[in-house]
Figure (cartoon, rainbow, N blue to C red):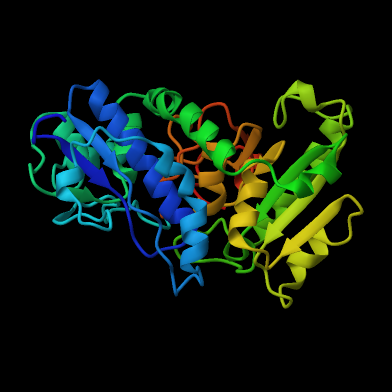
Length: 367
């Protein structure tokens, strides 16, 4: 057992399963990165919680993150947990600081605008611990989401995200496969490239939202455009640089669209139901849906933590919407409001989800 100065980090809340798992994976990466920086940090696993708001029963919550229990801890934080494995003295820290660029801005954001929160100790506690301007409690467990650490590390040192994930994701991916092997239903996709597309209703069913002006029709067009591009590419006639790796080019695409869209969302169904190579999966078990996302040959993301967390665990190709927040490209300027924790990994392909982006108009921030 290490000394009592260990910085113990946990993540638990009652949000959706994807958000919970995304937060846990972020804290695992943050703890590992802090250790490399010389901070005695440890991730403490607290199981996923049921969510009444998101209609998630405890059985599903426990099943989805069970693979994380395979991670053996050193024991440095055990004395700070109760008999159920929950923190005796949880200490909250701000993981998603309440700052956003102006939602209707029409200019390319300056680096100082999105780096400023990362230099504020009250907004980015773990970064302050890394910089030795704050120290962790010797008795409590810090409970948060760790999105701020992931974001601020990349903002301060571009490329940090890839390095962080290279340290932790291979072991996590292996643990997930060992705990939850590919579903039996995958057998029917033998001989084809199984493309799983996550279409979150909130992304496509609403025309516009105040803080996410790229939702609605632009996102629906993103899914349609990306699927058409994959069809062409995997038939050997499309551009191989955007989506799937070359090894898939000899196998035609077959799509599973996972969605929570309602029967009244006519535009969604018209887009996906009329194609002979598309199977629409609606209202399935969340854990089974997540398995399909993780084990896909090609995973097409929505603007959702559910598919984003699956993409971190996936070993296949990943296609992300370009209007997801990221660093290092002038279109769109980072970060987009509401996407603080979503930074695509460098090897993911990005497919345009914004009409102005297709026209390459740097003066337009949103669709």
